[in-house]
Length: 576
Image (tube, rainbow, N blue to C red; front, side, top):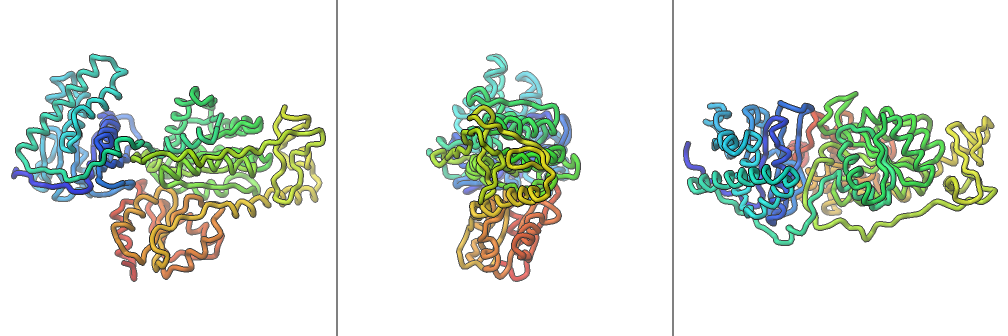
C-alpha cells in the first residue's frame, strides 16, 4: 500500500466499530475524557444492537477546535475491531477514510478502495494477557494520533481500571503504551498530521451526557423520590439517581413494574415529596391509567419518557421521537399536562428543575421527553448554571375548614398535605366535590372539569418561548424539537445562508403563543422529526391552524446527521 499523506484540520471524526462485548464503550469512555482533558472540544454518541454479544456496535467521537454537539456521517478514521464493522459502516466511508484494523479482518476488496492500516492487536493483546486488552491498545493508538499526552491517557486508564486491582491496571497501562508505540511507528512512516487547535480552558470544562444533565436537574429541583422499572433508554437516569441517592437524601425504589412505578411516585407526591418516574414507550403504556389519576387527584409528578422506536418493543436500543402523541393524549378524560423536550445539556438541566416547579404549581403531570440519541450523547460544556435555580414552594398549612379542591379563578386549589395543619386532605380517583368526597352531582362534575382545564389557559402564558437561531428577516424557517437541535443548528452554520433560520422548541406543549407569528413570517417552513407521521407538525396545526410546508421525517432508528439536513435543504425547490 502507498504511503498515507493526510492532514486533518479543525475537526476530526473517529468511529469505533466492533461486536458487543469487545469493549467499544470502554474505549469511548477513555477517549472522550482524554480528548477533553487534552484541550479539544469533544462530542460522542453511540449506536448499538439489542444483544449482549455479537452484532456490530459503533461509537462516534469528534475532536474539534470549536464546540461540536451533533452527529455526522463523515468518518475520517475508522477503528475496526471486527470483520463486520466495515460492512456495517461502509455507506459512511469515503476514499479518504483511514481504516485502522486488527490483522486479517479486512476484506481484500476494501484494501483496494480505502486507506487500510493493519496492526497486530490480538497478537499484542495475547502477549499482555488476553484479547480483552485489544481495545486499550486501539485506544492508545488513536490517542497518539490525536497528540494526547501519555500522562493524560494514563490518568484516564487509572480512573477507569483502578478498582480492578493493581495487576489488571498495570496490564491496561501497558496495553495503552503498546498502542502509542504502534502509532509512533505508523506516524514515522506516513505523513499524517493533525491541525486542530487546543484550548487550555477546555480542560476545566465538564463532560456530560443528556442523562446526567437531566439527573442533575432532578437533584437541583430537590427531587426526593424516584420509583421506576428498568427500560432502555431510561435506565441510565434510574442508575444516576440511585448512585447519587445517599448524597442527596433521595429514595430510589425499583418497582415491580411500570404500573406500580408511577403510582408509587404519586403516593410520595401526595405526602409533599417531589417525585419522578422514568420509562420508555411501551413501559409508559402501562402507566397511562396513573396519568389520569394524577390529573383527577391533582397530585404533581414528573415523568421522564426516554423515547425509542415502536410499536411495542420496536428497536429497544435505537432512537426516535415517536412518543409525543403518547405523552400528549395519555390517560383517560381531559386533564392538562406540560411536555418539555430538551436538545442541549444546558436545556436539559434547566427544563428539568422547571418541570418540577410547574408540576407543583399547577398540580399536574409534567413530561420530559428524551430519546436514546440525546440520553447517550456526551460533549463538553463550561459549566452548569445553578445560580438561576429557583425552588417554588406551593404547599399550604391547612385549617379545619380546608377544601382540597376549592374552586378558584385560575383552577389551582391550595395544596395541603397530610399532617401539615389541622385540615383533612381527602383525595379520590372518582369525581369529587371541593372537600374531596365522591359525588355524582352532575353540576359539580361540570365545575370540576372546568376547574382543572382552567389551568391550561394560565400554563400557556408561562410556556417557554422557542429559540430562534439565525437572522430575524428569514425566508426559510426550519423547525425542530428536542434532540434534532444539534444537527439542525450545525447544518445551519455550515450552510451560511442568512435567509434561513431555525426555530427550536424545548417545550412542545402547551405551545408558546408566538408560534403562529414565527411560522407566518416565513416564505417556506420545513420541519425535521424522527418519526413517520410528523407528530409535532400535526400538533402545531391542531393548536394554530398552520400547515407546515415540508416535512423531513426519519424513522429508521438513527438520528439526523448534519449532512442529511444540508442535503435535504439543497433538495428543496426554492431552497438554498
